Image (tube, rainbow, N blue to C red; front, side, top):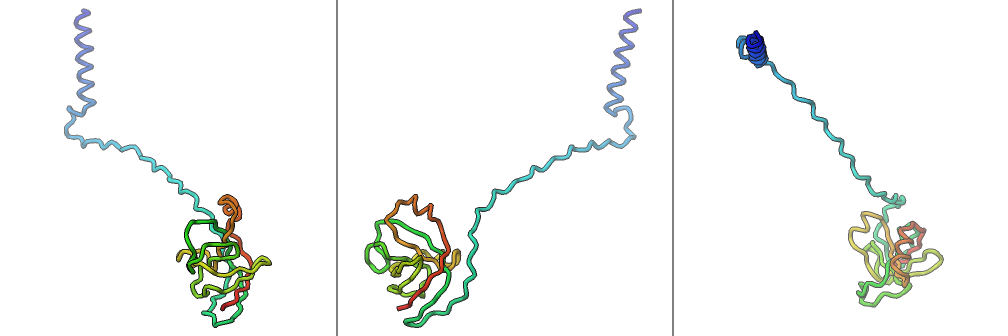
Length: 160
């Protein structure tokens, strides 16, 4: 009797397995199993570096000789690089580099109660990025120049 029960259980199990595999019911359409939804990971963009606001500057025409221009300019500092300036001289305190190529070398710039002389040029990308820019030569450390950063001062330019 125990053998018959065991055979019936095995037979019922086989029938159940075959039925679940849909082998007995070929007339039924195959069941489509839905794929699990894949979650799209949200990509967080890196924060953009803060850009200093450009001061509103009028578009200045090319100046004539001995003309005086009053405006606001972006000011930064630089230290000894080991290279001579555009005019061939070695950098010294009181020399300034400018981003505007229409300001001739030798022109004077009055800012922060001091007078500077334009003796050098900055890189071409400075003008479209920061507007009118003056780079002051200093004998301070690089760290002090970085702490100075970029400032906007009123300037008086005398074209020579």
